[in-house]
Amino acid sequence: MPAERSRWRRFLRRWRPWRKPGHYDYDRITLSASDIEAKAYQRHLGGGAEQWDRRGRFQAFLLHTLGLQVGDRLLDAGCGPLRAGVHLIEALEPSHYCGIDFNADFIKTARHLVADNERLTAKAPRLECFADFAFQRLAAPPFDWVLAFSVLNHCDAATRRVFFGNLPGVLAPHARVVISHADWFEEGALAGTPLELMRVLRTPAALAPGLDITEWGFASPPEGKLFPIVVVTPAARAATLPR
Ligand SMILES: C[S@@+](CC[C@H](N)C(=O)[O-])C[C@H]1O[C@@H](n2cnc3c(N)ncnc32)[C@H](O)[C@@H]1O
Image (cartoon, rainbow, N blue to C red; front, side):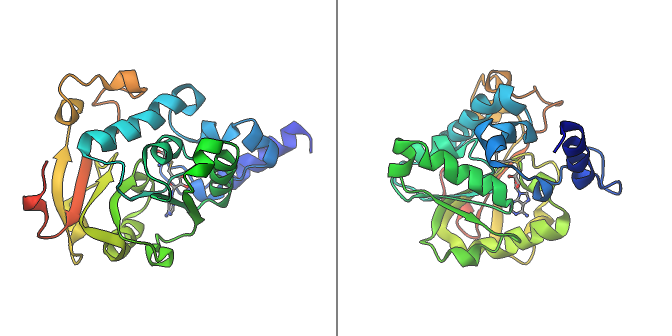
């Protein structure tokens, strides 16, 4: 297909005039085998190819700073094409990483990246494609951590309610759910769920003293939307967990 026509098709697929400016329809992105080979998926995430590696590594840094241990089980909810996943899979024991996404081509990309790298293959990560955050489908051992990095900010309030409603069924009692880009968050978001707010990180310094977020490829607050980062946990546990 001539390049001009395929550009038009891509544009029309993504063009939904009723959506707010800046809204990105991740469910509409498609990637051909040659797109995947050429890493074209990188341009669909904030920071693009230029910040890909740093923003991916940052997510592993974030979780380690919050207390992630090598033997923990992690659910990367909205894992995309493993920007962080490649680092998290390496950091955890075999089969302790699970990534889910509703975009079939992102999951295809993720599987390709794992198959192409012996070290990642040996870690046997689980990568699944489904919508509506239907975590119960995983029928997996409970997760110690859930990461939703730049995911729920792309969802509407109803989808976030589904996320928080379905999550408790797959959480260990001491689990922590780490949610970035959470300026939309209010405690009412957890109403009717057995979850409670444990911690809100409003600035880079709240995560680590002297942390320069620009070194990780993000804009400084207030321009950067990475903060607040909120940590949610099953109710009644928040007071007993180390912060
Ligand atoms: C900005 S990307 C972030 C990807 C990844 N967390 C990272 O930071 O590298 C947002 C991701 O969330 C996924 N996503 C958005 N809404 C979703 C939903 N309702 N169910 C599953 N995945 C979703 C998108 O497909 C996309 O991969």
